[in-house]
Length: 106
Length: 117
Image (cartoon, rainbow over all chains, first blue to last red; front, side, top):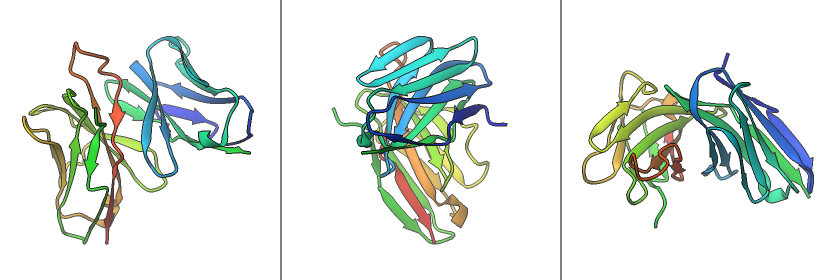
């Protein structure tokens, strides 16, 4: 069993839809990260969370420490949001989810 | 302020050769992390370094792989006697020193894609 599980693995949405990607983890952590990997392979760090909620533009990330769960929301999705979204946690070690591949169709 | 730089972006090696991957962290950052992404797989942590120190190398293969982050110059990930299974994208990330920012926030480089023939 992976220390970090993401769902769904693949997601296709129509432009404008509200999108949610979920991440559950089973280890103690000091922080949780949401990363975005573009089709060209580059990785961008979107959020680092240790509690609560953060918002950046159309992106919202939440974390529930008690439930060991985080969600990444994208409002008013756009084709340029198409990418792989990766959840990662830092604790005693670094663990990554396998990613959620998002395709937003115009 | 330039971001994290990695070079080369693409590297082709034959089996048995050595591969050297370089990572220049963001200006002022003293923490460097190396990650590997095998084809069709997720990112895996390899090693965490500070200047002249290896902090955590729990993700490094026991043989053929080594990493350094000297006082001057970039961090180097070295793979000796490469095999086809080493073909992957290798990403470097950096974060600020303790006490000067949020060291949990990592800034990623563009990656080096290693192909072993």
